[in-house]
Image (cartoon, rainbow, N blue to C red; front, top):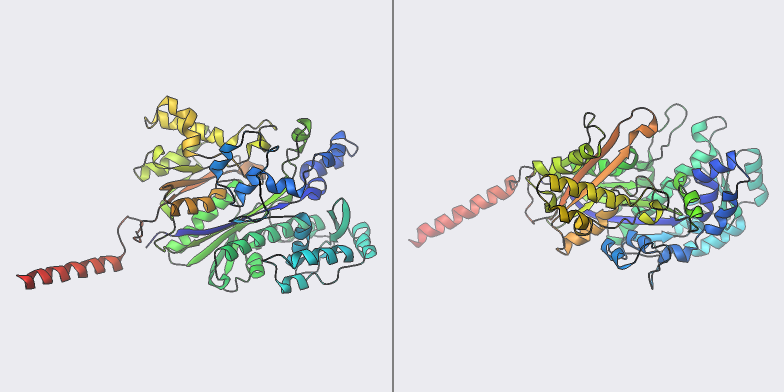
Length: 513
């Protein structure tokens, strides 16, 4: 059987300044324990405009308007730099403003739980009518809006979650059950955010790559949220809900959870499903997490910089049967952090990086680009977490020195030569390896790279069920045009073709004599 290929990808960011203060856990906890804190007073002064978010260099990389390596042309920090001529539309997706996204949440709602007032609805309809991916049928779901008196009643008397835009309440999300904590208004809010942002990324995947949504067989949703009710918390299914929204009428699907490592788990699962012949086209998709908005906001405010965690992230990737063109997913070269691996940095890097390389007879330097935890250092360094991608590259390089595959002097330049600056928002699962897939597909097609490794890591101890760390990796490789099998042999059909050709040549040789 032929390897599967990574065929296309879509990426979106959503600028959500009001959701930082009202929905990010750092801020909502502060409201609860210290409602009159100086930090909460400072938050509005440290919010960026939509234009500033659009022209921010790492965001332009995320939506495909710049290559990751182009960030090296900008001196750090980047938050005070702008990309000249930048727009919200990118080669791989878009950056959507908050008002349009709130309307998209309403469009995503099939239980009439989202209520938007009449003036906001009227305003946002005009904007969405101009959006290339939002259809008339979608806009029609907004209807005419609700009276503000009714919305205030839902908020004040029925525990609805307020929706803010420009610091004003423009609507709310009702609870879906009177006593079920898993269907309260806040949980429904978070889940609709996942659905709407995931669907937006999926729509860009379809639109920018001329994909027929009816051709998709299976969807794997791999964000960090969970939907269900009191009898089956986290039962799902975001995947099928998103597939329904984008018109993937022939698809079924399921959700995969693994904290930050889930997208790479999902990528491997998708590749295996396609390679085995169970499905021909599988999409992995994830929406954003409002809980992580402003997660490091206190540190950013202390450093007198903007609160940079002001965007939700989303992505979608299509994995398909081998087309002889797009990069193959080497399911025989998968790295995995097992139960017995241990949690030391060397043990982790060995299991995820060098173990799969050894199986393929490869050196660390045989991989052109490693996509690790691609968090934006603008966000993490002020919070004391350092440059996460750079730290990963130093560990990989150090192991290369130990294996005599690198000189000690190469450690300093390894990140530049075999890595990239971090550009992804700290949305947990969003930075973990997968932001590079879209760029990698293009780099392979331009003959810029021969091999890349996607690495996902996760912290399972956050769920309080185990102290285990987690991680998986998979190698992407240039497609030779011959549909190779897992063992490296050509397919049975091609073998028969070659035998037939050899027999014809032999017969011709005999006749010629």
